[in-house]
Image (tube, rainbow, N blue to C red):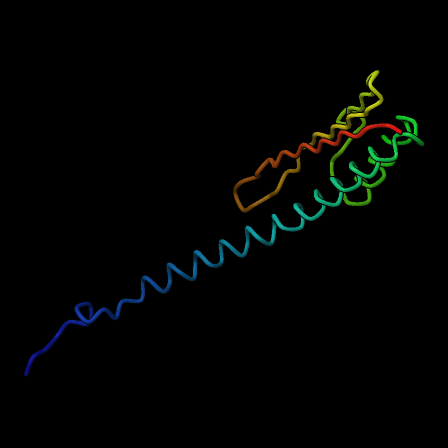
Amino acid sequence: MIVRNRRERGEGQFGCLFGVVLLLIAILIAYKMIPVKVKAADLRETVFNEAKSAGTHRDSRIREGILDKAKKLGLPVEDQNIEIVRDNNNSISVDVKYTVPVAFPGYTYQWEFHHHAENPIF
């Protein structure tokens, strides 16, 4: 009768445990990052829409619309984070730069966003 060691037959449990730990880490990262990404995409859409309506709105109205949307979304956008430039060729450029801290256990990731919209003014 041949007696084999359990390890020789490949019945170790370390690989399964390692895979479960990696899966849990991936779920935690997605849980923290996806809502921030969705909010940033919503703000980016607002920046583009405000740039499109530059012919009917003043810069202060555009800035106010972006700040209101950022406040509703809970994003840390302030007045100095928004740059609006109108040039002589009848076009507008809107830039919004901000950083969102994403807290993980033992580490805080500083996620930087830059939204840029450039449109002609009619």
